[in-house]
Length: 296
Ligand code: C5P
Image (cartoon, rainbow, N blue to C red):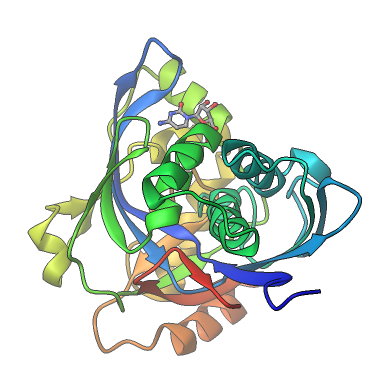
């Protein structure tokens, strides 16, 4: 095996600080405007290995696999196939292992992050003759959130999510990410938003510091829809807000909630005490400069 026979890439989750849903489009997607940041924790790892045979992509997933699709239906496996096809190299043999820590069905874009990391890892593994713009196109074909995950950092997402305008928001913003004991499927939450007549968020969290240069308040228009699909979320959010002593907002289409923290608060220490009180997984996280990092 040559030196480039195996490549690893870390995939980072994403967090919508503000998510406005502007309406249903003729293609069935929703027009959105979302201020989004990459988070440094928890991250997944994609490992790809070039093999002489068999040709094509083989895929296994390990770790926090609950609700994560296995086999070639996983978006990361599809990303590998699509990027090889785009480069005219679909016959190549590639073994993929995905180690999951980002929970699926939480609204943190874990599947999209894995797909983005796969695009970058396979390009390097097979030395594909594809530019960043080519990868962006393949990413947009895979899913609405994959282009943001590929680029990472902080950006406005527009269109159905694939139009990215980078924002010079410094990384290091602190958050708690709390995971209730149930998950939500994005299409179900968007459908509920339609059935409710396209609500605006009923709650807002004050934007502080540099974030306030970009949005007046943190709000998520999918929150009323998610809380209609799963009414137990309302009680979960209240308990989280009491335990953290601060307001929380839904992450993306849920089911995770996020508590934005002031500068000077240690997310890890607060996460530990809030997690112990609520008896659910609570992670401390900081915003990250990238969505994908090559090399583990
Ligand atoms: O693009 P992606 O495949 O990730 O989207 C999953 C589902 O989420 C879509 O099929 C659609 O139901 C919903 N969605 C939407 N509007 C968006 C993004 C996603 O309605 N902007």
